[in-house]
Image: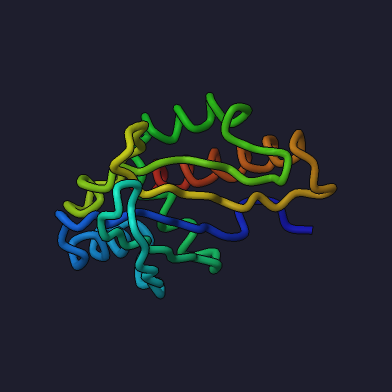
Length: 149
């Protein structure tokens, strides 16, 4: 059975003060040409809010996303995998939405982010195995990126 990352799911919010086309561009810059779904809703104070979501399920697209991260971000992800992977074998991270619009894919910890959930494939599907599989996958991405530069 293949181990690694089998899918990426991204979600972000577009407030009434933001340009939805720019938010779409941030998602496209980070995740490539994915189908973006838009759901309209209301914020906490009744203000209009759009939720934008997309997914990437092909290996090349998943690799492309992770290869856009700087080496420092990748190393930080590797150091914190144990904190980022849940019992359902999901890896969580956030990407700076404003930088993504500019084409710079950088992890972030604030609120103005693209929230990313990566499904880790491991067998058996246990958290410990997922941490190991994600570590192997991300290390492989890092090595391939370094070798090609």
